[in-house]
Every structure is written in C-alpha cells, then in structure tokens.
Image (tube, rainbow, N blue to C red; front, side, top):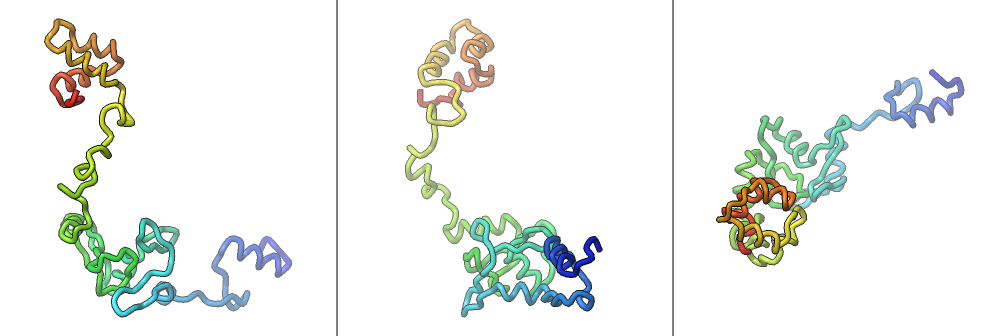
Length: 191
C-alpha cells in the first residue's frame, strides 16, 4: 500500500474507487446489479418510471463505464439479450418507461413504422416546412449560401451565351457544378 496510515489509505481507496477486500478494510459489499437497477424504478399501475439520469428523454445507466439506455437494460434483465441490429421499442410511447411488458424488440424500420402510425413523426402535410414554408431556410437565409439572388439572376441570364461555366464559376467563386445546377433549375429555382 502506498500509505502506512489507515485513514490515508481509506481516503486513497475512496478517491480511486478501487475494489478492496471487504474483510480486511470493513467496506460493505456492493448491491447486486439487478437489485441496484430496480431500486431506480418507480413501479406504477401501467408504466414504470425510471428515476435515474436521462438523455434525450430516455433513461440511461452507466455499466462498466459505458452509458446504456435503461429500457434496453430492463428488457435484457427480463427477456434476455437483444439480437444484433435490433433495438428496443416502447409500446406505451413513454421514453422514460422501463416496464418490460411495454418493451419489445424490433428493427429500426419497425420503429419508424410505429412512429408514423402513432403520429409521432411529422411527415407530409404535417411537416413544419409544409405547414409554414417560411421556416425553410432558402436562398440568402440559408447558412451555406455563397450567392445572392441578384448573382443567381445574373448567372441564369447568361445561360444561353457563349460564356463557359468555368469562367462564371471563377467570377462568382463557386464550382462549375453550382453554375450548371442554377442553369438546370436545381438551385435558385424561384429566381
């Protein structure tokens, strides 16, 4: 041991979270993992609420220095391992729920299909860009824009002329493919 004094030795052990011989130093035994996991769960009549930490609305727990979703751990404790390439889905649509009866295994495609059926994905007419097109960053409001509307109009006006796209690209500091996309109405369509 690096320290002869017992108190300093105990401080050293606590600081570095080492596993020490329980009989020798008088530390309490660790609680078995399943028991420590279920202590962080509030069991209700339907959903079981995770009381630990969260990320993006999902419960999470650290096991062997890896952060894992609490719903995944709950499923594995009750039903066994999760097959490779599959994920754990909630039938109750509560991200914080760890009730094994509400959890099932499925592919990402199954998960997306469930989300669409239950109205949790904004697609088609419900998508924010279709509800309010002003939200979509277009033209000069887009964060990657290199041209102004006036420059795009100038490029479009020179479409049928003898000027090559490489000359225009050098003049406006963009690539030839950008010039050709403007001429083909794939970019700056509304100008």
